[in-house]
Length: 181
Image (cartoon, rainbow, N blue to C red; front, side, top):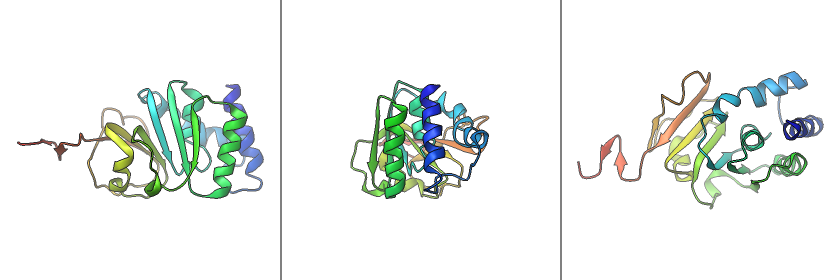
């Protein structure tokens, strides 16, 4: 909890200079940036997480602070937000977090077991190369443009409010039909 408090304190400090969140009070920050992520954190499989458009650190950094078995990459194209993320990671001290400056379409790292996106309207097809086959795409808020090699993971997505979870189909499967069928 001390690491989470350090993140939230850093966010409050930086939000005076950089537009990171509409949440102005500590209670609003906890509700918007932490509480809404908690149900999703329990569903993540151990391994790699790529948070696209990390901005204020939620959900990616929050997930890293709550789960030591995750290796999280925060991907943010805007300079000020990238600088904030670097400082928030330094102060909160999660072990396996990398902060990269860039857009989703310039990312050259390996596909992740889980990719998270918060309130970005990106076509799912553009995110497909970032998600390992069989991995999950977790969308918190926003309305994804439904396309690409994904199917909604209904079992995982129950009781999550405006969060939707998709599973990437294996490379040899298209629309639920095995290769060669």
